[in-house]
View: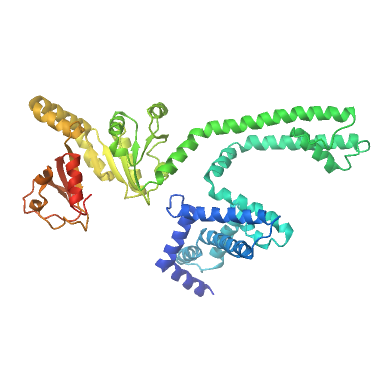
Length: 511
C-alpha cells in the first residue's frame, strides 16, 4: 500500500502537466492579479444572479423546463466543480507524501503513509470549516429545491457573492477591525433584550393577551429596542411601560454607539481602502511605473508627463510628503518600498513593471533594488546613485540602469561654461523645448528593416539625424553605412515627431 501511494505521488510530482494544471487552476481561483480571474469571477457572478432570479421568479410564475435544467444541472454542477477544485488546490498530497518519505529516509526510520495522509486531510477539513467554504457547499443545495424547505439555501448563493465582490469584502474587513467593539455591543444588546423580555413576561403574562410565551416577550423586547415598533405587542401595565421607556432609550444609545463605531472604522481605513483600489487599478495595466520616494527628482520626472502616461504609482513612507503628493494630484500610497510585502502587492508576474528608486538615500535605493529583484528578476530597476563609487554596489544589487544626477549636472554646468552654444542645443533637445528631440527606434524580430544596412534606411529622406545603434548592451556611435541591422537593435535618431511617425509608417515592424 505504501509503495503504491508513493509511486503515485512520485508520478504526480514529476508530471509537469499535472503541476502546471494545478498551479494554473489555483492561480485563477485565488490570485486577484491573474488576467483570467476577472472572467472567471464574472461568470460565477452571472450564474449566481441568474440562479437567484429563476428561484425568485418561479414563486409566482411557471418556469420553462430548460431554465429548470439550467439551474438544477448546469449551475449546480459548476458550483460543485468549483468547490471540489478549491478543495483540491488547497494543498498537495503528493508533496506531503514525498516530503515525509525523504524525511524518513534521512532519519533512517520506517516510512508511514498515515502521517502525511492525516495531515493533508486535516488541512482540507479545516478549509471545509471556513465560512467561505461552508457557503460554497451550501450554495450547491438549491439544486434540490423541489423540497420547499431547501429553497432557503438560495440565500447562500447570494452570500457566495461575498467572495467575488471586492467592495463587500472591504466592508467586512473594515468591520472585522472593530470586532471587539461590535462584539461588546452585541453582548450588551443580548443582555438588555433578554432581561427586558423576562421582566415583561413576568409582569404581563397574565394581564396582556398578546404575550403568551417567553418568545413573545423577547420578540417585543427586540422590536422595541430596535425602535422599529410594529405595534402588534404593547405593554398594558405601568411597570411594563416603564421598562419600554428604558429599553427605547437604551436602543437609541446603542444605535448611536454602533453608528459611531462603524463611521470611525471607515474613517480610520478610508485612505487604506483608497490605496487598495489604486493598486488594484494599476495592476490591471500591462505595464506601469512604481516610483519610490516623492522628492525633487520625482516631481521633475512627473512634470514631463509622457513617461508616466501608461500608469504609475508613488510609494512614499513620509506622511507629510504623501499629503504633498496628494495635493499635487498624484497617485501615491503611504508605504515603505523596501518592504517585501509592499512590492509583492503588485502584479509582478503578468505586468511589465519598471521600478524607479529615487529616494535621497543610496542605502535605501540599494535595499529597494535587492527587494525588487528577490521578488522577480523581470522587474526593471532604474536607481539613483549619489556618487560614482556607488555604481558597482548598485550593479551587484541588480539595478538595470543607474542614474548619477550630480555627475550629469556637473557635466552640464561645465559644458554651459565652456561651450554655451552646444549646451543650449543639448538642453533644448533633452528637455523637448524645441521641435527636435532624441527618439528610440526598436527593431522587432520580424520587422522589415532586419538585415538591411544603415545606408538602406535613408534617414535624410525622413529629415532624421542618425546617432547610432544600441546592440546587446553596447552603443555604436555613427556606425559604418554597411552595418546590417539585427533583431532587437535600438536606433537613436534626432528629429521632429512628424518625421519619426512618417518613418514608422513606411517601415513595418519598428517600434
